[in-house]
Length: 293
Length: 189
Image (cartoon, rainbow over all chains, first blue to last red; front, side, top):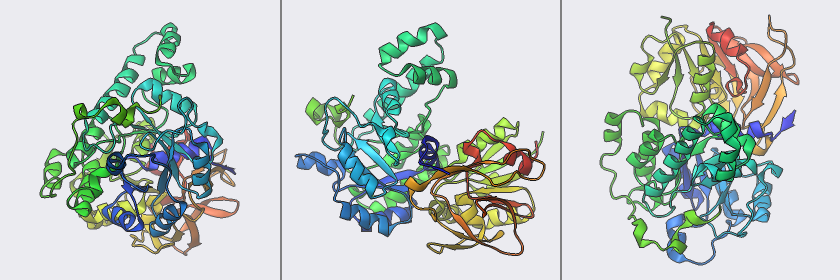
């Protein structure tokens, strides 16, 4: 028997496909998420929009709160650590969370280095804005990727940009000749072996989900149509007028993204979505997606 | 043309099963509403979160149609969460199930994700030369096998693959390995 192999880590990401991972800040929200049909929850102290509003340093959550959520639901429980903060990650591993998100939503602990993720038994998910960043994270051991989007804005524009950019880069790689791949690896700043793998297979070696700015069932379905394999929803549910209904609707939309008639039913009468933010109102310092490299 | 094999596509590992069936030259169809079941030659219940699958099965009025399809006798393959749905009894915690196969199944019984593992089956299936490679992800455990079900494979003596008439149930994920023998055995090709 061999535990926590890379294949076992990616396997959990495979099982989360076609589903919704919801941010929750307490056990009650976790139960609402599970009842709505979420396939996992992300335990954190404040949703991204609240972190954005409060300012200050955002850190990993209190272990007690994560354990309460683990006790409240039977679906996988994820938690976030700061970029580069391998000690927060070790603590989360000791709690046996099912996935660690090395997340730009929290304040980075290291400007230069991300966590060496292959050293952990728990799988990691990391954000990416383009293919080079995606492959760097996989090179460090990430078993799942997600777009960074622009968390806590309720605005899908950055998530869409990141999905299109990653998938556009992948398509481009498949058109290159073998002798062109090393130069492309240099240009992307990505490990050559992974660049070669993507060029040969036309896809990433791990699942890629959408995150950041998803506020409506249509946003979630759009991400699926653009090639995301599942979605993370942060502030979009619990900062909306009717979280239970909206959570259920987003879950349904990720299942029925190929069926616009169903999506119309699903999107009907959900009450107000979270109030969104326009990107040009954000300064560079406000942009969480610029964190990490 | 042969009837396509359906893959329940509410949430979870449905794409990997589609790819496995495509490797065998079989056509597939995603099942999300009752009408999708018409004319299928078999059906896969993939892994994922069984609680999510159950909720969506009820929400989209699939309970009756799925039950009728499985009882019609077409080949059925249930992996991981699918096995939980198919079992006669589910514990840890208790939850509703279809009862197509005479097993008592405990959810997430090997522990959380850090305890997910790879192994190899104790012995080859009848007619095979090598045992199946096994990948377990937050897997359920077969706690008891009733008289109607037959154990087809074990790991360290513990049942992990069982069959009752047309219904096969596995607590592991053959669709996530490169080994296609089990899909071929169940769906022919």
